[in-house]
Length: 111
Length: 112
Picture 1 (cartoon, rainbow over the protein chains, first blue to last red):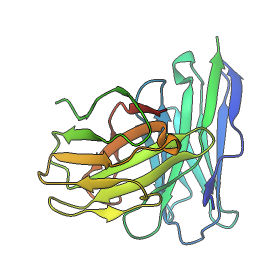
Picture 2: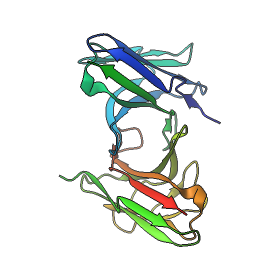
Picture 3: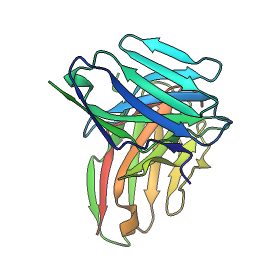
Picture 4: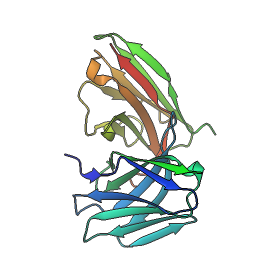
C-alpha cells in the first residue's frame, strides 16, 4: 500500500516558467517531508525539506508547500531551467527510521 | 570526500547464484540504508542500520541479508538470486533517522 503518492509520472514545462510537482500522502502522522532530485545513472540528491509545523519552506528557486488538512505536498520551481530536468521524489517520515518515498515525477524543462 | 560509494555498478546473475553488494561511506554517518528502485514503485527500503553491529528490516526484506561490521560499510547479500530481484539498488547514509540521506550511484542488478 503506497502511503506516499505522486500521481503524475511526468511533467513538461517551458524554460523560465513555473514547475509544480505534487505529492499526496495517506498517513496523517507523517511530520517531516523531503524532496529529492535524481538524474539518470546517479543516486537521488536532497533538495529541500519541510516540517509539519510549517506550511512553506523556500530555498532559492525551490519552494515546498505543505497542506496538512489535504495531506498534500507540492514543490514549486521558479524559474525552471533545463538543468532541472530530472526525476523528483517526495519522501515522508513520522516515527521510527523509515522514510516512505513516492514513485517519482519526471520533469522535462524545454529550452 | 567520496561520499557514498557502491560496488559493483552492474552485475548479471543467474537464478540461484549469490552475491554481495558493498556500500561504503566516509561521512561518519551512523545510519545506513539499502533501497531498491523498480519502475512505478519508487524507492523501497530493504534493510537499514542505526549503527555498527546493528541491522533492521525495512519494507521489503525477504530474500536479502545485511551486515554492518564496520561503521563505514554496509553489505547487502542475496543468497539465492531470483528474477524478481532484478532492480536498481541504492545505498544511502545519514547522520540521524530524520536527516537528509546521501545516496550512492546505484547498482544495476539483472537476474536471469
